[in-house]
Image 1: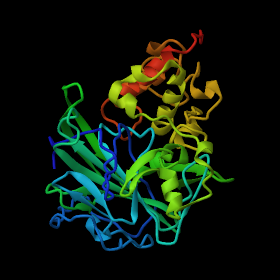
Image 2: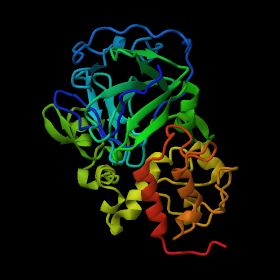
Image 3: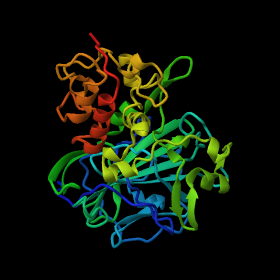
Image 4: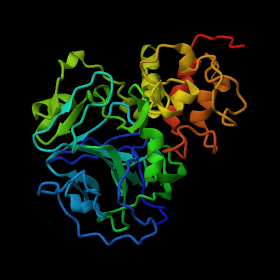
Length: 407
């Protein structure tokens, strides 16, 4: 399936009746994990079933067993080909992120399913503590033309992150050409995707559906006293979920909605919960809409969601490079200011320091978020073309720093 397909970004708010296609300009979620199940990535795709509406039977999910070959067997979601949106079982809760991960201008639809009678626990600093049996769903959608992002949309991939008793594991599903069902493809795939961007320019992305073992590059964390590597979700932290969202019965704060359903415990008053920067106005209006007083927060939250899953004290690359891009990193040197890279290799663009305050043209960080060169592009996975607005935000942020002579 070579896709000069109908492809797009910028989604929409979750619709009433639990329809959610999320507006996003940002990134990828998958994961490792051992399983007895193996699948041949070259196996022909299984023909899909006819279009379905919102699944109304309970989901058939057993996280202790290998997942089914067809996504429809889970009865968790369906693609409405007429309206071109994802529809969910009413036991799944759609959600959005304040600052989402960029993934080659895909729109994303996200949802969380937790078993009946279970709940997540609030965490002020990291991902919510979800119970065993949880399934986090992320679906990637392209549109032909980003100037009309709600039309001519093609669903490409759905990733499931499941919490079994042994830990989190991820399973990628690729949708068939008929857009009727998705097949489990643990071997991944690369799709050439052509579309028109928001400025009317033609662009082509080499969109990667990652192999399961590639997912660990982003989702593995070094935690505990022995720094064991375990798979964890990216994104559903309180600070990213603290926002209003349209649900079937109206607009609610997402965290409060989960708490009111009995699916989130320990939630403090919302005015005590931090919120990441709302990136939607930036995506729509460009970096000039960010006031000077909010520039540092906007850029730091963008780096946090797009880079810090690797580059923080617990991330794989953070450990080796000692470059910490998490939003609450307070060490300017570890943030990259006048810091020589520890492991960039030839990916430094011939530059010396990660950040040269006031000089984006001589800052490796700016070079790496702008380039598409193999061996230099960052993030390594999930991006094959430049995120114009995100790169411009990082450039403006470095340019606005008080100049320092790093030499």
